[in-house]
Length: 111
Image (cartoon, rainbow, N blue to C red; front, side, top):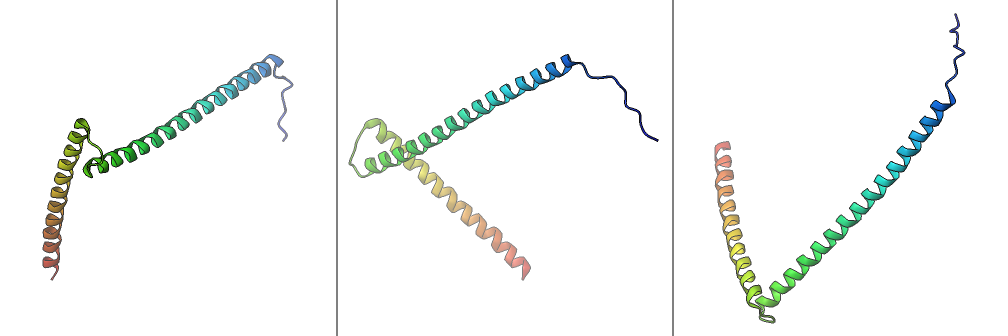
């Protein structure tokens, strides 16, 4: 048995509203895509700048340590970096010692 199609047509106004809504969506999507691209570019440039700051910081640190440049504020920061470096080394040694003990105990229990 065939299904009968109704003879009711969709009004032209409906299609116009639908097309207008679709055009609005397209425009908003395009605008959001542009904003997203701009944000991505800005983030990329910020990362590049941070890399340059890091490079500059390392250079200033090394030049200060070698005595090629001197500035009281920079010298203080270099001393703070050196103190932090000592603490990092100390903690890393403790990690190695604790790891050796832990893994040594595991090996001893297996034999």
